[in-house]
Each structure stands twice: as structure tokens, then as C-alpha cells.
Length: 242
Image (cartoon, rainbow, N blue to C red; front, side):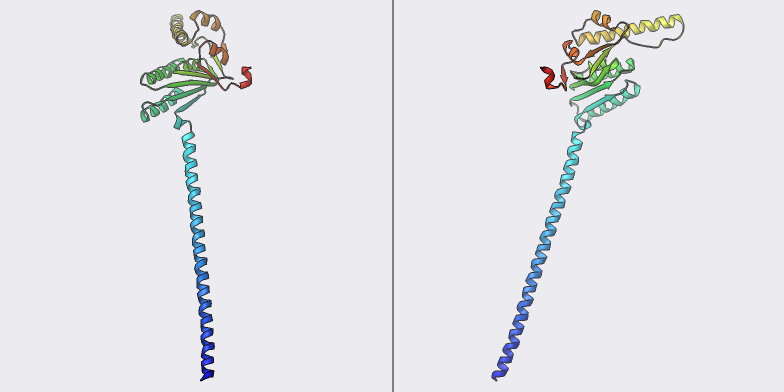
């Protein structure tokens, strides 16, 4: 009886050891499973954070774009197509946001006077509807672009930018009376140009006529500011003030 009891005890001990070993392995497996689930959750959280950051950066980039800030960069010649593109975009912005502020930056050698006047009048219409229009220049605002620079409520010029004013130019062909009619029309156009510049600056008609007769009159940013052709200069290096 004693031996059987000892043998059963050994069997029971062995079974207990196996049970404990199985329980330990189960706990270890559960711990590994929990660790794996935690790692997976951490990875998924990290991945979600990265995606959120990417979406946020994309949104921030879009928000920083010129179009989202109603800033139009008018580059190249003033022509029917360039004016049409500009007016189309400005119209879109004003319909989306009826009281938005708009900025137009000119970097242009000028071009068509008639097309330019169309844009000038369009800008005045926007101002009359309550839009604050800021006009600026980087590089140069020459000829018709210089006139368009005058169109804004606030006008600025880059310190290294130049404005150029000159007489109106048209190509006249045909019979003598046709050329004479063209000359009369050009003179009327020039009167409109003189009116715009004298209305928005310290310039007088006589001074403009003296400086633009038979030549291009180039004005630096500082000269533009002194003559009230612009309201401010941007991009001026601090040491240049010394």
C-alpha cells in the first residue's frame, strides 16, 4: 500500500509539474499575444499619426498657395489673353468670397494699352464693390504694367524693381487722314494715362511730358515712393537705410 501511495504521489507530482509547465507556457503565450497586440496597436497608432501629419501638411501647403490667399502674379506681357486669365481668376475669387482682399503682383514689360485699360477698369469695379485690392511690382512694372500698378487701394514696389513710363505707342498704317485719326486717338489715350498718374501721385502733367518725350522714363523704387507713385517699398535691405 505504501509503495502504491508513493507511486501515485510521483505520478501526481509529475502531473502537477506538467500542469504548472502548461500554465506557465499559456501565460507566456498570453503575454506574447498581449505584447504583439500592444505592438500592433502602437504601430497602427504611429501609422495613423503619420497619415494625419501628411494630411495636415498637404492642407497647410494648399492653404499657403497663392490662390488660397487670393494673390495673383501677373507675369509677362499685357495682352488680351493675359488680361482674360487674370479677370477670370479674380471673378472666381470674388464670387467665392464677396468681400475678400485681393493682391495682384506685376512683373511685366507692359503691352496692349486697350487690354490693360480693360483690367484697370475691372479692378476699379472690384474696389467699388468693397474688395480691397493691393497692387505690387517685382522686377519691373513698365509701360501699361506701370499704369496697372496705380489701380490698387494700396500700391507697393520691390526695392530692386523699376517702373517705366512712356508715351503711348500704336502702329498707324493707311491713308493720311487715317493716320491723322490714329494720332488724335493716341493723344486722347495719353491724356487718360496722364490723368491716372497725376491723380495717384505728386506728378504733374507737365513733368510727365518733359520726362517721357521721345524716351522711356525709368524710375527706381525710391523715386516712386518719393513721387507717391507707390505707398511703400518692400524687400529693402536693413543696411541700405544707413
